[in-house]
Image (cartoon, rainbow over all chains, first blue to last red):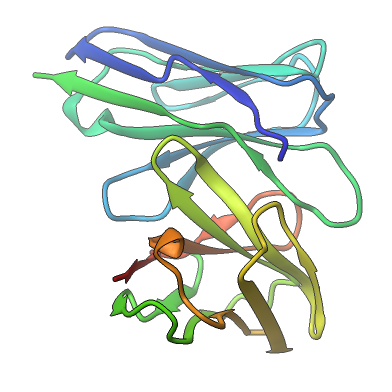
Length: 112
Length: 110
């Protein structure tokens, strides 16, 4: 099945550092979404992007919808220990089924 | 938080037994989805529904069936569970283009 290429697979950083992760696709997407999953819980939506070039922030998080509509990135500034978790990108490429395609996730570990 | 519950939250079953997982929503959303999550694979779509009695297959539908007789409930059935179906199962709902997830069901098939 179709999947997004998400990188890096994992990151181990010190508290206070900035983080960047990205997703790429061979298909054009109409929507890009970024989720965070804490251990033992379901993914929670962080940011939704709807237009090519759109840059959206949510607190210390910033995400952009790539101009080509085939990529997106998520930045986390000044990381803190509670940022630990798995981050997933996801995208819609349209159609009546409304299905999302998910990236394989980026595991973020933050050392105090 | 989106009103999504899943039951059971944990289940251990034996190979060959039938298993049904339930997803219940209070949001009256049209779309409902079942995913499984496994290490190295992220979230993979099993089946989805776009309305009462309207369902379709996702990318990993073999060995699974679904039913949606009411807007609020979406059932996932493993007719004869196999060890390869040991996984964490998530239900999701959406009414536009953003999905909200339930808390998950951890299923172990021994």
